[in-house]
Length: 79
Image 1 (cartoon, helix red, strand yellow):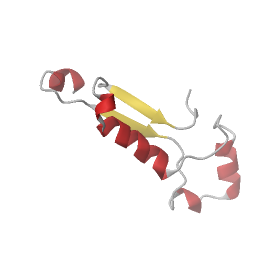
Image 2: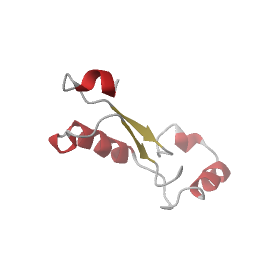
Image 3: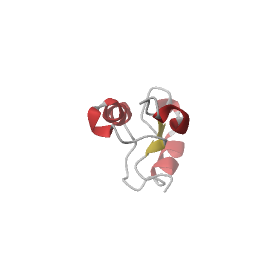
């Protein structure tokens, strides 16, 4: 889509969140959460605001030359 829409000044990007601490993930057992936490290099779960800040950046003028990217917000979990 980024290649198709770039000539029309449309930027196409995606955000791929990792483990984000939400009501849904809070229902997981402590053993599951501890196992996941061990796979995150920064040693913490993400917050919804971490994803929101990334979305705000992509919507801002400062990202006007970024297109065709998937930005992973996961504390290094999948690197």
